[in-house]
Length: 496
Image (cartoon, rainbow, N blue to C red; front, side, top):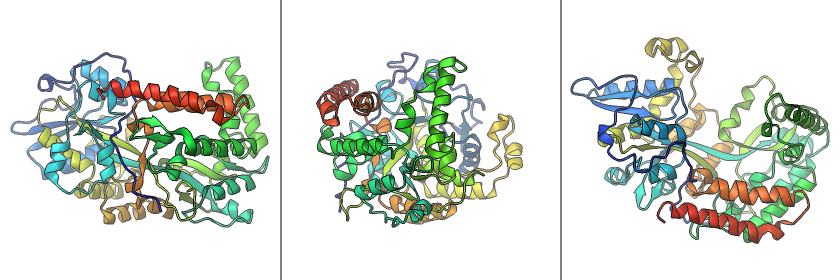
């Protein structure tokens, strides 16, 4: 059995926003957001919510909260932009930062003093229905800078019908890497079906199954280094074997070139698009990978849980499938789930952080807020939303609302209700039961991750190993040093 993961403080990739804002986040009380509702009504405390929440859901939740808290006015900020680091930096420069925001990643906001410490509020709450490792992943220098409001998983969609057609036993959730490889190879039939989507997730997510000290991409949060031997090296060699066996799709597809490297409509882009379409046609009998999956032509499809609604597409052929955790090295091990979290924070601009914290709770782990989401989705009509919240862009008024992300809660009753509400696959519930051993998306929590892992370790592997120029063991020392140097500089930028 896997041991509980030793969690250490980790934070996200360093981003450079378009506007230089060092020190701008401080004297928040004088900043006034250019929000829709103007100033608060007399005697009321105003909180401006600027998170990524769906515009309609945010307004319904605010309306319900205000009904229970008549002394508080919640305003939903909307300027038509996705409020990542760059756009938020522009709002800060214009003295328009909301009181509550989502964090694309916390490093740039911390450097520029955008967010307050939430630890005193959590300490005052005592026991909260929030997974402990989520709190630790949101901690920096003993300060809790963010808590999750939306949780997703990354795993493998398994086409059980295709396995049965190939006389392959359906594995249990404790399946091994050897079983994964066997399935991928046996279900690869040129022109008909493919074993697995890609090999990149194998290298990123199998090392944490072999060693509890590792996270995404074999990053060791204790040493703050990429520990590429022996686990990542083993995963890299497994990946190379699948690639050479033609059992993986996307890396072979990318060997035909990347059309997005060229201007739309250019001859270069058109030529590459045609080559990719022809490759897919020869490999799967389709010109689109997503279409091939929905028609049942893939066995093991890596995806986030937000991609599980493919079965609502008219192309879905109705094959039987389940959502699986990553395979483990040895039978009897328990897979650790890969987790993506969208987190929220209170800004240093906020003049009423106590009130902001109470609403933040309602939007995240508070039972009343979670229950409200179920009720809002159940009773939603487009007409009611248009009547209650006029003036938004027409595309904001959906025909239906959903509650498809997992609530950040340890309340088992709420978890069970969410699973039933979304008709989630049994594998999703199984993975949710192991959240405390999970590891969080490196882009969200590891300084310098994108540059160190994606643009260095994996890019070199793809360009030199998959092309046959070198082996994984040939590059490992060089890429580890480059990645560790990038990571050290990212931590140093945070004063660590």
